[in-house]
Image (cartoon, rainbow, N blue to C red; front, side, top):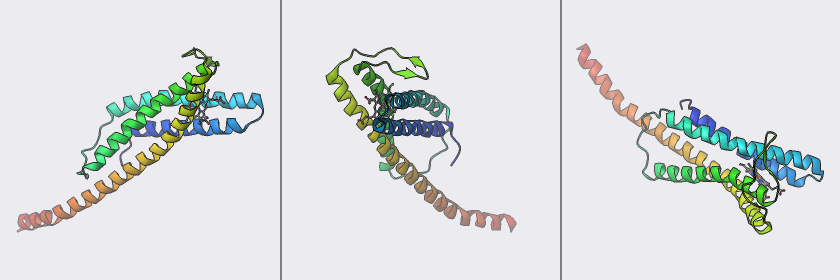
Length: 183
Ligand code: HEM
């Protein structure tokens, strides 16, 4: 596999989302308000940072050169594409839904000390639904990232097998040509 900036930034984004997720869960368990607030701040910072790395991912993927791909079973690129689009939509929505949730809860979200403007006015009902969506969104992103990784590995194995078969098919022909040239 060749080094690609897009791929590296993509998995950095997933790492940041996973870190943010873990911090949210840890924060929920902490009884000290001060520590809990600090953990929630870090949770928001990592989450918002993931939005920036996601934008960088999209830019890098635009410029990354893709090697000519070997034939794959038809369903695989289709499924990878669909899973990829769904994952990107969730990755954009997750930090935005967190920012919106903070606004509905009547607090200001922050990014490394900068206070962000509220996206909406406080609302108990919307905060309740937002909280449920935001929590589920985090779980869904982690599950779909695992599925995405699984599909990437499957595609890699398929291409590997296809390239070995292709080399085996061309090897005897190359040998014949060398004999003929040598004669
Ligand atoms: C992008 C990665 C993020 C993930 C995976 C994530 C995940 C979570 C999870 C799992 C919870 C607990 C909710 C539950 O248990 O149902 C939570 C709470 C929360 N998140 Fe996020 N979040 C992310 C980003 C953000 C961002 C960027 C912000 C704000 C700018 C934010 C603001 C909040 C707020 C305000 C809460 C509620 C805390 C409370 O009321 O105790 N989140 N988040």
